[in-house]
Image (tube, rainbow, N blue to C red; front, side, top):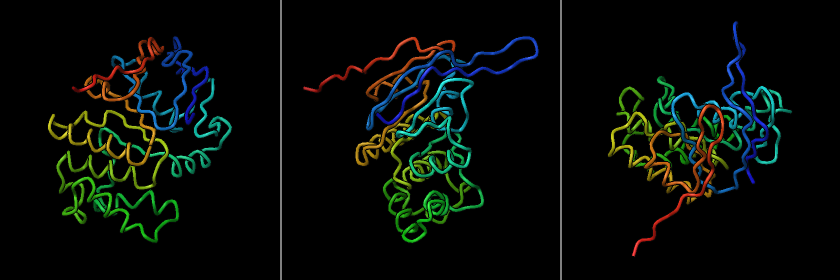
Length: 231
């Protein structure tokens, strides 16, 4: 098991009433699993993803990541854990506009103190996602699909044990989105990285091994995806 959420509540205090965004969430995920978190807008998907990644803290309950209980950690300790074990892919790419594609991919390696070999590793990953001719281009010089591929390369640069993807194809056209999906799953298989995707796209969700469905802040189903076998 690489991730376990236990008795998770997320409640925002209001002037007139409190808003419960997540209501008694419990699940565990094994290493190497691919999992989609789906549900209507406002169901708590992105909030749950942020909690699992240690970007926010639950009101109550605990989340264990790779054997470490994040509620017992300081913010600096959680940041260090993320840098060692986690990769991220965001819908809006989150690339630094003043850095080239190569420099953006190198960031996690440099934060880990792995500057030696960082350039070669970043070039390898960018080539792997089809951007060998774009090393020195800035985000503003790249298409949306190219920016997302830079984001994908960056997400894998620190060899994460678990990858969180928040609507990774939400801003892409169908052809480019399909390319990014294939790259994401290919890299997942090659590196045995656990993959957790928040998405509205059921076609993408059905490519994972398991779907967790949220509604009104609660898990309403958690099931394996039936795979059709080609003849």
